[in-house]
Length: 303
Image (tube, rainbow, N blue to C red; front, side):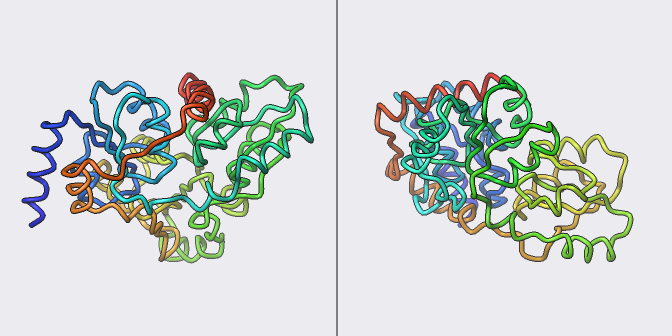
């Protein structure tokens, strides 16, 4: 059955001139069949440059929205519309407008894990790959409002010394990781380096051996002489790491590091979406126009 679905997806993709983009946290069979697998910045760049007429986004809704914003004349499919992001839901456009009114002249830096409406209210987006360089690009005399991830914001502050106004948002999956849990893994694997995502809380990031985006974690492992690593990010990423670093031993920083939203999309749902051209993503034109500016500025700044 799995092989039949794979064959259908590959055939149907050619028929409709589609490209399949998948995030590192997706199920292994989705990563295997995708045309490109990457982090949020890499996927945004791919979406902006693709020649395909149909973009099938295997990720969560804010990623598919971003693809539509960057490609308003193309069809964008999200095979399961339930795939959301709790962090993105922690900031709304109206609340952000109120905050902006309190600090006229402030620059709003918006983590890409946010809705199209919030991106439209922001000056520039960032991903965990290029957040440091995005903030460094802002003049020192400008107030920075950083939304919605307070943990990523705190990490940026620790690295740049830049004071920012941090929104009270976070990724529930990464935020739940405690240093006590990491220490338990260190007791089991004392030679392992601790490499974590900046969405983890400060008590973890300040003690880790390295703090990187998902793409950054992959590059870190590839270039490191170390043999063992404790990985502080969603469990789906271990599939990519193990494929690319076959000689290294990898351990999750906690037993359950699972994002249910990233697992909604299955091969069967992907095939069904391609077959019926269903779960099309739309963004209102005015919101799309304003949000596009902040996304394009993000893409211009490398990690």
